[in-house]
Image 1 (cartoon, each protein chain N blue to C red):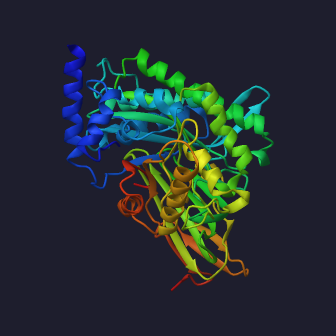
Image 2: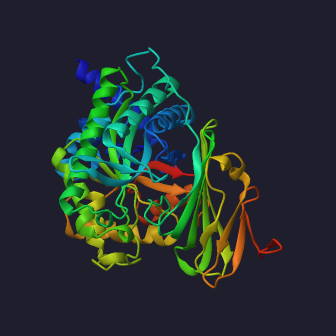
Amino acid sequence: MRLLAGAVAAAAALLSSAAVAGATPNPVTAWYMYGSAASDLKSYAYAHGCDFAQAQPGTSMRVLLLDFGAARKLDSSTWGAVDFSNTRFSNADILSALERAADGYHNCHARGSVDIAYGNSNYHLSGSGMSSTDAWWAGFHQSERSEDLADYQSSKGYTSQTSDAASDMEPSWESPSVTKQLVSGDLAQGWALYYDFGSADGCPQSGSADGACNNGWHVSDVGYVSYAALALPLPEIYYMANANQWTVVRKWWNANAQGTYFFPGITASTGVGLTPAASWNTLNSLNNGLVESELACFGC
Amino acid sequence: MFRLLSVRAVAATLAVVAAGAGGGFALAGSISSPAQKAAALNRLATVATTDSSTAPAPAPASAPQPIPAQMLSADAPMPIAPAILRARNGWLVSDGKTLVAVYAGAAGNDPSVGRVVIVRQNLAAGKQSVRAIDAGSTGELTVTAAPLGRAAEASALTGSLRLRTAGGRLLTLDLGTSRISREPHGTPLP
């Protein structure tokens, strides 16, 4: 009986959501993380969590994307990231910051729910000395820390929250073989969805073939890092060309791989060719409604 | 983040949505996504919209500290996508309340166009802005001189940076006005 009641309640909620299907979503802020010390990172993350909750539009789940910079192996047994102030932080430091973001969201929570994502990037992984195996472990530990965050959220009664991982995977920044290891490591650990908020730089803008992209990548590689295993695409759509490229990725996947490719949403920015709303609308118009309503925005 | 396309999708999604759920990928429930994602997608669908605990969490004990003004070399991670900026280098400062980062290079879609991207974070107001400023057909830009160190933490937020074009010409970026001008007389670029 309880199950039936639950199903009815869920149907009502979803039918309500259906009424607004197709509407351009409101953006939520995604943050670049800077800090000269672990205490800074925690303070900033707390503030970002609170700000996100206060500004959250609507009652649906939104992604709070915190981009901690480039994934790094810090020593023989420690992984983490080097942030945008060029400061190296261990995953333990980053987890502490993520927990403060959860605290901040909880303290300022007004409506809806949140998926707090531990974001990093594939920026110059091999250039920093990381091997493919190191990149695999970076993805593994990233997912592990996301699960640690979920444990923290659960222990604190933050039932409006969950946690996942994300990566700004840019073809121009690293080879496909090394970058794919981030996704594979995440899958091996098994907890976190792996949002790809990167680009399909240099990929073809039409067709559905496995064409070449920047830096030795192909459309199939972008498809892999954005939709294989636990990966999901939140692609950067800054210009019309980006929407065209990601449409090719989607078409290639559907013609050659398992499952139907869809976009949970997009990543946008201010100060570029397309406004955040235009970015979402452009991708959605090219993909026949296969774009969900996440709109993470750097600069909003 | 999640919406539905049709009532058919509602029906298809019911199987993975729990009562009181705050969200989930509607499309994931109505189309065939790789099986490896199923557990994680189901997890999203069971998140509530309220917390079971109403006890407030403690705020961080310390406020963010200033970050001394510093140059960012090419090996420092760049947050700006190559589609927007082919970065050469950057510069960063924070007084603990406001952070400004400047990234210089060329436009991602046209290497002949010099571009800087300014990231500003107002931590008190919870705001972040990203602004791209083009210098015209200068080729890629490089930050060559900027305020540095702790003494510049506050003043540098609205100070000036010197930029060099690919052809060796010097320009000035005024952070107060977010405008690029020619040196030595500060003539605004067209």
